[in-house]
Every structure is written in structure tokens, then in C-alpha cells.
Length: 143
Image (cartoon, rainbow, N blue to C red; front, side, top):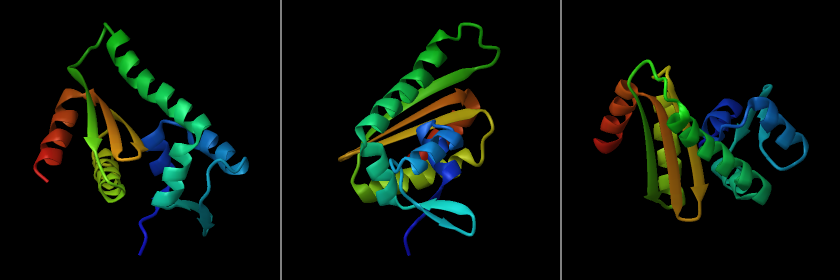
């Protein structure tokens, strides 16, 4: 059985709002299937979406913004951290990474997550509360 991602999963990974993703669906840049009123996307749907040149540029901007916003915030009130993981990964490993990090995001409240898949490569960006990211990284390295 194929693993499906929801519109919210895709929004979390990409940084695009669900409204923007809906526009991409309307303009056929993003493909998926709607079942019982819920959009579902396969791994291939996401790969194809991330590979679109227009989307790729948007992802690059969104990912850069997470890092730049972190660096620009000189008035942090709590301990914050930003982690960038560049991981050589097959398509199967990319799926496992996205599953792992999407699952982790369900456990935290003060962390941003961006993911970009490319041929043979996965980039993960985490930014947020130091303790939450430390726990995610601990679980990542202990898998």
C-alpha cells in the first residue's frame, strides 16, 4: 500500500500555505487525488511537485527564509536553534525521512520544519525551541 501525504503534511514540508497549495492544484502544478473531501498525495506526486522549476524556486526562497529569519532575530526570549541536514538519500530513504520528520512535528509546538527532495538528496531544516530540536535530533540519530 502506498504512503499518502495530506495537504497539511505537504504544507509543513514545503512552507507553502494550504491556500497556495490549493492554487497549485487548480493550475495543475500539483497533482493528487481527493478522497472523501481530503487531498492525498503520493511520494511521486510530491517529487514531481518539488521538481517543477517554479516550485523549486519557491522552495529555495522558503527554506532560505527560515534560516535568515532565525539569524535576523536578535531579540530571542528563549533558547533557539536552527539545524540544516543535507542527507544523500534514495527515494525510499527520502520517504522514510519525510515520514520521520512529519511524525516528529506532531509532537512539538514551537518548531518549524522544511524539507526539500531532489535527485539523490534530502535537505531538512529545523528551527525552533532548543529542547524540542535537541529531542528530535536525539531520536533521529538513535533510529
